[in-house]
View 1 (tube, helix red, strand yellow):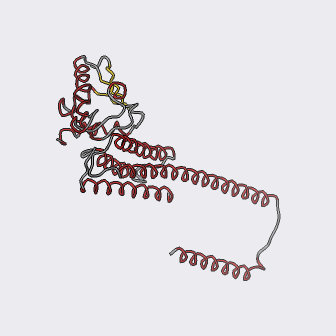
View 2: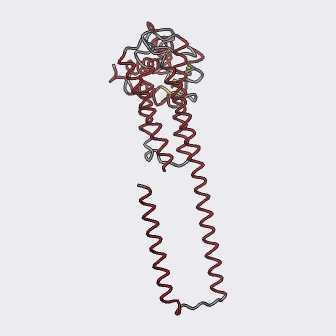
Length: 187
Length: 112
């Protein structure tokens, strides 16, 4: 699809160029050139304005790209925290969790909670509207995950239905983090 | 009119490793915390016209079942309005927890 747009733009550009050359050839005898101080000043001012606009635009683009990279890094941290929590949930099964397993589960749960909060803080720092990225959706699936992982039947044993809920909630948070990452990248 | 404040630190006064919902499920449960610390301190604060400042920092993490049993249980016993009036919650270690706890309080009567 993208190559079609590029081809159309190239065709249009070529067409405009050909028409301009043809018109110039038809009227070149009527065109006269003269050099005066006012024209030179106009040209210089135009050049400076153009250079300033270009500078401001590239600077803003660079800042925006840097913000985006930082935000994506924060989202990556959240994905890592989710992976840690996913590994911790592997202990959930037909036996009760041991004290050590309960601790690692709640610690991993806290890490994910704080990582998601860091995304929220990052979005605020970049003045990104929470509605634009639909952040509440991520918070909602995270709250569901926290609930299915550490609410009843915590600390186990977990039946098949509970384990299924945990897997679905982990997937939902993973999908939301992916969606947020793409939304941030494309803003 | 709330005149003063009582403090309750879960990590310092109860445990750094909060456990499950019920006593039968393991030690340092939400049920135990509610019975031994939260309820008595809440009643003392309420009767003194004070607020109860619950500090959650210092613990390793809080399972939903522990929090729901303790704070949701308090709201089921004393009512959401009373709990909202007396209780103050602080958690710099995991700021989202504060909102979660208020959600458990608000939904306490519909949950069980």
